[in-house]
Image 1: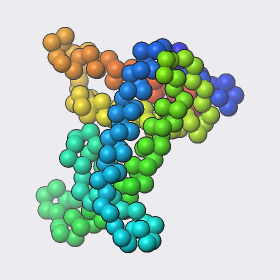
Image 2: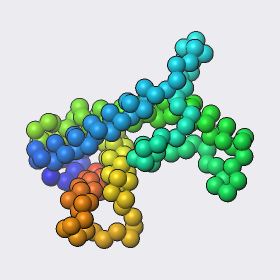
Image 3: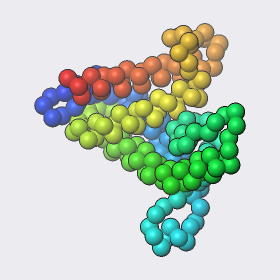
Length: 185
C-alpha cells in the first residue's frame, strides 16, 4: 500500500489488489453484522407513530458486537440495582439504532471509495473521517476476535492459529495511523 498523504483538500492512498480484497471483506462482514443486529430491533407501534426508532434492549451476545456496541449506561458490577438495569436497557434501546446507522454508513463509504481490484483512493475530509471510523471498527473487531492485549508480542509462534491474522491487525493499525497523520498534516 502507498501510505495516505494529503494534497490540499484531498487525502490519497493506493491499495494493492490483495489489500483491497482483505479490507473490503472485513468491512463487508462488519456491515452484515451491523445490519443483522439492526434487524433484531423490536417492532414498535409507538415508534412507527412517533418516528422514534428503538433497538434491542439487551447487549449483543457476540463478543465482537458487544465490543463495538458497548453499554450506554454502565452497571455497578458488584451490585447492579433494578433501576440501573432498566436504565441500561432503555439507553441501549434508544441509542443503538443511531449508532448502528452510523457504523453501516461509514462502512458503505469505505466500500464505495475502495476499488475492488485495488488502486488509488481519493477522499475528502468527510470521507476520511468515515474511513477512520470504519478502520477503528475493523481493528476493534479483529482485536477482539484475536484477543489482542497490550502484553501480546508483535509476532506469535507459527503454531498459534492467530499468527497469520495478527499481521492483518498490525497492517490495519498502520493504515489508520497513516490516515490520521495525513489528516493532521
